[in-house]
Image (cartoon, rainbow, N blue to C red; front, side, top):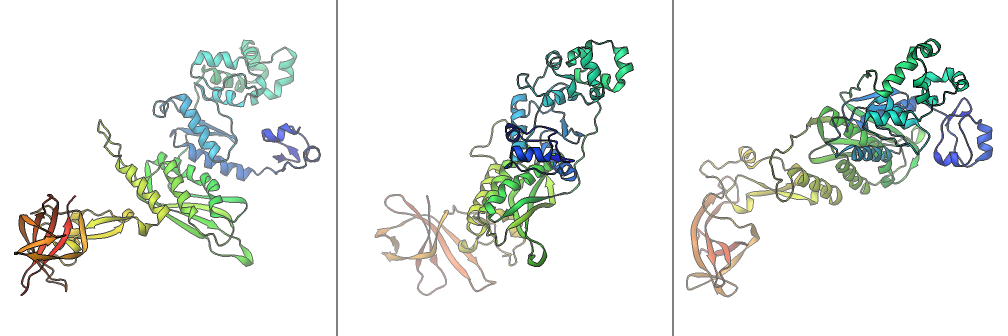
Length: 474
């Protein structure tokens, strides 16, 4: 990264080639001609820092932007929830790595102490500690050049043999304050926990919209996923911070502008139940992008959320539900619908009708939100004389479409050469007078010699009544 034609920041790979901070552009290009040299963009850095802050809000609501390249997180209340400091540290590092960021993390009882541990150049000193006395011992070994307020007096401090923060603390406070001012002493006291720290916590915006310019043309939708991760992580942090969940959001892939301009490719995402978990949204987006035909190269991405709902409350039961929770079932439906298509993942929806063949309608599983009672109230042709379905007899889960005609021997229905014995019934169904499918039947539960059960019916109000097999029991 170049600033005023000099190297201001570099990656470890670039440092391995011999490039160092402060080197001029021409020297860096001569040493490593294959290393890309990018000019620093403060606006892009500020935007990226804000994206990162939104993403980390999923770990704590107390987050402050302390400097152009620093984020401070108060995680004392989050340690137990995320399984301890080690696991929380790993999860934060994984989130930042998934966004394609190279960061340095520090964890300490004080914010200034964590900042110093994160900025140390030596890998021998651990960057994570939870005890104040351990933090003081580790800070004493760090160079005082890490403190920006000590930079103007660096030569003088070196001339008197002061090399580390421990040496700096052992100097007389009155004399150090006269020469270096109060800011240096306050920073030292805050790092060691001897002075309070005050921060302004970040407030998430009321609405979520993020846009990302891609570094190059992307011609395949699958390759968009790695960049879309930069948008999914801030979305999940924003949802957690506002205690909201999303059920519909839209990813837009922008294409070339100018003479060859074309409208963006929009990818609407719908979920069976509201969600806010990163892994679920990322997996769902992966399935959607895998089936998206990209007709033109993408040059930018944007993610918009227009509607959210409150996060569902956590289960208060002592034991988990057998077979998985409703949220797990909803995540499975989302993945199946994204992989197979909404029209191929269906769910039965009861309808207020006594006729078995019309008492159910198949609809997309993600849209099956109404309860049977609500469907009954919304029926366009209710039967005023009918009682609730399935009130008299057991109904089989396996219905035959169409019903199979049965032979009759000695006044008994026969199926597969075996006479059937009527064990329950009749259940009389007279329904459908308001449409062309008038149904007048007597239903029975029948058994064969092997005790297999069948659901059969006999026609009524006909000159030659026939028997039909309509369902089978398990």
